[in-house]
Image (cartoon, rainbow, N blue to C red; front, side, top):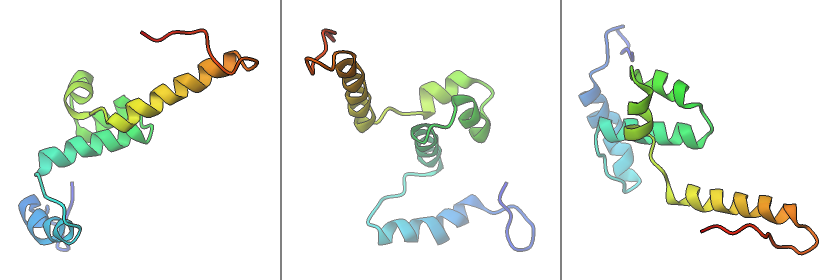
Length: 105
C-alpha cells in the first residue's frame, strides 16, 4: 500500500521505528503497535462521521461486523455528547416549560 522512494513496499516495522515512535516519544505518547493504530483509525473515522461500510473498506475487512464490533470503539465523551443532543431535542419539544416530559430510565 505504501511505497518507498525506490517504489518498493515500505517495511512497516522500519516505518514505526524510524518515524512514528520518535514522534510519539516527543509528544510523550506510547506506541502500541499497528493493531492499536488500526482500531484508533477506525474510531476516529467513525467520530468524523464516516460510514461504517467505508471504514470497513479502509481496513479491508470482509465482514462489516468485524469492523463494528472489534475496531470502532465507543469514546465516553461521545456518549456524553449523544445524551446532550437527546436532551436538546427533548427540551425543544417543550419550549414553554424548558423541560421535557420524556423520561430516560
